[in-house]
Amino acid sequence: MALHEKCSFADGGPVFLFDSGEQNAEPLLPYYLQEYHGLSATMRLAKRYNGLAILWEHRYYGDSLPFPVNGNTTAEQWRFLTTEQALEDVVYFANNFSLSSARPNAALNGTDATELAADNTLHPSNTPWIWLGGSYPGVRGALLRVRNPEIIYAVWASSAPVQSQVDMAAYYKAAERSLTRNCSADWVAVTRYVDDTLANGTADAAADLKFKLLSARNDEVTREKAANSSNVSAAGVLMDPLNFYQYYGFEASLLPFCNVLETRNFTITPLETGIAATSGIESALEAFLMAIREVNYDAIPGSPDDPIQDRSWMWQYCSEYGFYQRGDPGNPLSIETSFRSLERFQDQCNAAFPEGLPPAPAVGNINKYGGWNMTPSNVFFTNGEFDPWRTMGLASIESNSPQRTPTVAVPRCGVAPEFPSFFGLTHANMVHVSDLRVLLTPDANHSDFKTVGFYSPVAQEPFYAGLGLFELALDEWLPCIGRPSQNRVSSQP
View 1 (tube, rainbow, N blue to C red):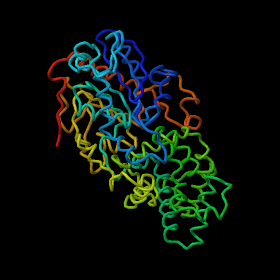
View 2 (cartoon, rainbow, N blue to C red; view 1 turned 90 degrees about the horizontal axis):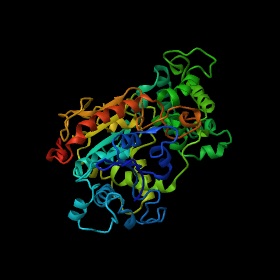
View 3 (tube, helix red, strand yellow; view 1 turned 135 degrees about the horizontal axis):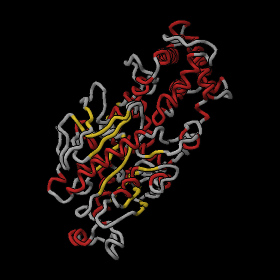
View 4 (spheres, one colour; view 1 turned 90 degrees about the vertical axis):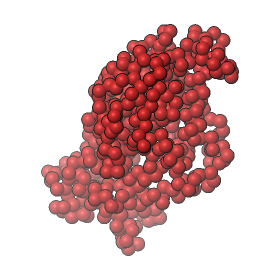
């Protein structure tokens, strides 16, 4: 565990803990605690309520490594990377943390818990600890509020996929829903044609198609190299336009591609029914690959590769979370290749970790806290309308979800809205974690995915809407600190 702190603290002020989740915390410091080139919800709240802001780093990420993380990390060493262990880190820290101004000469030294709590104004029994996190950190906040309501008093969980599932074919449904009619029709048709040709066509036809696909991404690929590539690698070219969808949505990341595709690089007038329906699948494929070349997603800079982060998160989803984003040939609108199968994901997990994994991810370790049916009190859930992870969140509209609806009515402290409602917002047209930071002056260096290549806020409204509603909630909840009802958590079977 590593942490960074920033203080606007006055006696009685809350502790605001922002969780960096499945990544190194250090790169987040300038944005979430120092508010470089914008504002963060964590610091706005800390300043408004005279609180202490902490940036939390998860075990097995960044500098918080109990063991070296690489291909030689053993099953015995991996066994300490579990949801329960990581949640308990927070509990231990909160129970033992103090500032010199709050408790002179205090340290994490095993002092008697009763004595420590009585003598420390920052102990959760004396001051509220408020959690903020997006995506996996949002899940952790919701779980902690259910698991340890005496520690975490309130939570802002943004884009939190609280329902763990091995099969997450629903991941790309958000993108499918956002596509224009013609772009959707052509993408579906091209994907099915490619899958069928690679699976059932002749060897020569498959080799020719692989070369066309891989050449669209890299014009230096040889025919021999293309022929020897796997079906999933070749068909994966069709998914290149989705690389940045999670954070930038349709308008910024997919619309430029769809425009080039449907106009054949602005040489024809687009048709509502698409190219495949009017000119045939070969024409649609040609136009599709032209658009891949023109937009050139493969050349867009992404986040620097972090082998520690990649391997640690892979252990977590292989062991407990699942979230296998497979193709779904049964979905008539699927734009994801069917070669991305559940079996392929599990084989990858088993190859990376030959020992120590369960036969399938133990999603029950997460869902025992309620999953889609959880009803924690003092938790504010926000989602983006077209966020792929919304499918596993409380705002999911998938057919197998409970179809819950958010309410902006602030519930009383310690009381959850009556199921199936939950306290929260769904930001229209937004995507993943679009509300915990805001750019005051958006520019290409901080908001254009073509130059940034990693998460940056795409709109200002979600930040101010979310922050304003959470402040209203805290104004209602904070005066209750210390009352018996503060830690009440209802549950839904």
